[in-house]
Amino acid sequence: MNKRIKIFAPATVANLSCGFDVLGCCLDTVGDEMVISLHEDPGVKITKIEGADLPLETHKNVAGVAVEALLKKYDQPPGVDIEIYKKIKAGSGIGSSAASSAGAVWAVNHLLGNPFSPQDLVAFAMEGEKLASGNAHADNVAPALLGGFTLVRSYTPLDVIKLYTPEDLMMTVIHPQIEVKTSDSRSVIKTNITLKDGIRQWGNVGGLVAGLYTEDYGLIGRSLEDVIIEPLRSILIPEFNAVKEAAMSKGALGCGISGSGPSIFALSKGTETANHVATAIREVYDTTGLAFDIHVSKINDQGVKIIDS
Amino acid sequence: MNKRIKIFAPATVANLSCGFDVLGCCLDTVGDEMVISLHEDPGVKITKIEGADLPLETHKNVAGVAVEALLKKYDQPPGVDIEIYKKIKAGSGIGSSAASSAGAVWAVNHLLGNPFSPQDLVAFAMEGEKLASGNAHADNVAPALLGGFTLVRSYTPLDVIKLYTPEDLMMTVIHPQIEVKTSDSRSVIKTNITLKDGIRQWGNVGGLVAGLYTEDYGLIGRSLEDVIIEPLRSILIPEFNAVKEAAMSKGALGCGISGSGPSIFALSKGTETANHVATAIREVYDTTGLAFDIHVSKINDQGVKIIDS
Image 1 (tube, rainbow over the protein chains, first blue to last red):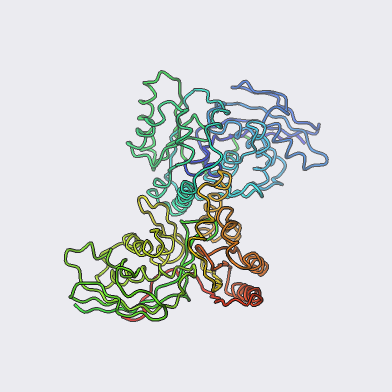
Image 2: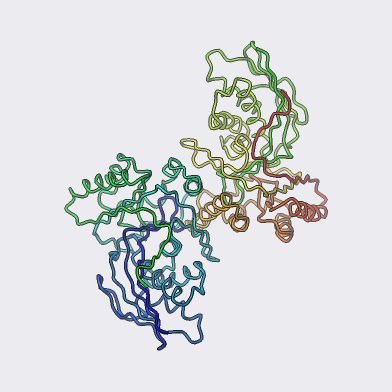
C-alpha cells in the first residue's frame, strides 16, 4: 500500500456577519497545497512544511492531530506522511489552520476509499482547530470540507448542513497583515447579549439562508448584518468602517469581519462588482502604509480539491 | 360603490420554537369569518360581532384600528363596515387578534383592487396587534396575510419574507382553556440571554429555514428546539412536558409553545402522524379536568381566503 495524493485545501470565511459561530463559506482562489501519502509503517509524520514556520511534531501540528483523530478509528492504522505547502497566512482570519486540518483528513479519507462521511471528517478536523485555538469550532472546517455555504446547526450533537450556493456570488477579501491577538479578539466579546439583539441576529440568519436558497441577492445583502460581534471586534481592525463604506458604495451586498479578523470580507453579485469592490478597498488601505493582501474568489462549491493523484 | 366580501381569516402559530418573534405559520382549519363591505359614506364601523365579547367601538377593535391605518393612505377614504364571526378563542395563543386585523385589511385591499403590497398590509395589521398587546408584532399577522411559513427578518425597516412550505407538513394544536395573563407570560422572559444560547438559537433558525426549502423533515425536526423562551414560559402551561413527550413519542417532528401560549403546537410529517399526535395529546389532557380544544391542520399556504364574494 503506497498511495499518494496532492490536494488544494481552501481558505474559508466564517461567521458571515449574522452567523457568528454557525455560518461559513469556502473560497476558490486562496488555499494551501498538501501532499498526503499512505504507507504501511504506522505513525503520522509531517515530513515537510513550506511557506510557514509551523511545528513538524505531529502532536503540535493541526494536520497531524486531525489525522490522528481519524486513525484512532482503526485498530491497525496505516502510516501517513504529510507535506504542507502553506499559502494562507497564519492569523489571517480566513481559516489557515482549518485548511490544514480539513485538507489532511479529506485526503486520508480519499486514499482509504472514503470510509468516513463529510460530517465525520468535520469532527476529526475540529481536533486540529482545538489545538490551534483551544476551541474545537467547526465554522471553518465545515465549509472547507463540504464546500459552498455551510451551517453548523448544533455542536452537541454535531449537525453540519451544506446550504445552497447561488451561482453569481463572489467574495472579495482583504487581509491586513497586522497581528490581532486571539486573546484580544475574544476579550472584546461579551458573555451575554440582549434578547433584542438576539432576535435581530436570528432574523438575519433566517433571511440569509432563505436568500441563498431563493437566489435573492437583495435579501442576502439585507441579511448580512451583525449587531452583536462586529460593533465590538471591528475596533481591532484598522479602517474597518472605511473599508465597509467603500465596499458598499461599489455595490457589495454586504461586508463584515472574516472569522475573528483581521481579514474583512465583502460579498458581491458578479465578478465585475467584486473587482470594483477590491479596487475601492485597496485604495482605502493604500493610505494606511500597512501591508495587505486582497483576494477575489468565486464561492468554491466543492471544498477540498484533488490537484494530482 | 357597494362592494362586499366574505373571508376566512386564519389562525396562526408564531415563534415555532427557535424563531421567537420572527417565525410563524398559517393554519387552514381554524380561523374566523368576516364580512367586509365598502360604501361611500366615510367611516369605519364594526357592525356585528358574533362568538366573542369584543368592543364594537372602531378605535378599540383591532380590525377597526388596522383598517383605519390602511385608510389613512387616502385623502377621501371610502366607508368600511366590518362583521366579525369569531371562532378563534381570545387568549389562545394562535393569533386571534391577528386574524381579525389581517383579515380586515386583506379584504379592504381586495375590494379596493389590491393597491397595497402584502408587506404594506402587514404594517397596517400590526397596528391592530399594537392595540391588542401594546406591541406591534408581526409574527402572527405575517403568516395570516402571506400564508405558509413566514420570517420577519427585521422590524426596522419592516422586512417580511414568505418561506417555502413542504407539502406534507401538518400541525396539531392543543388549546388548554386557561387564562395566561400577558403580563405573566412576559415577566418570565429575561432581557438578556447568554451568547451561547443565542448561537444555538440562530443555528436552529438557519436549520429550520434550510429544512423547509429542502423539504428535509429530519432537519426541520432537529431544528425545532428553543433553549431560550420555552424553558421559562412552559411552566405557565399545565402538563407542557407531558404533552411534548406524548407528541414526540408518536413521531412529531417537534413540539413547542404556540406564540406566548397557552396553546401548544406539534409539527408532523403527514396527516396520519398528526392525528396520532392529537390522540396522544388528548389522552394527556383528559387526565387534567381542564377544558381544551384540539386542532389538526395542514399548513395554509394561501393565508386569508375568500369564502363568498
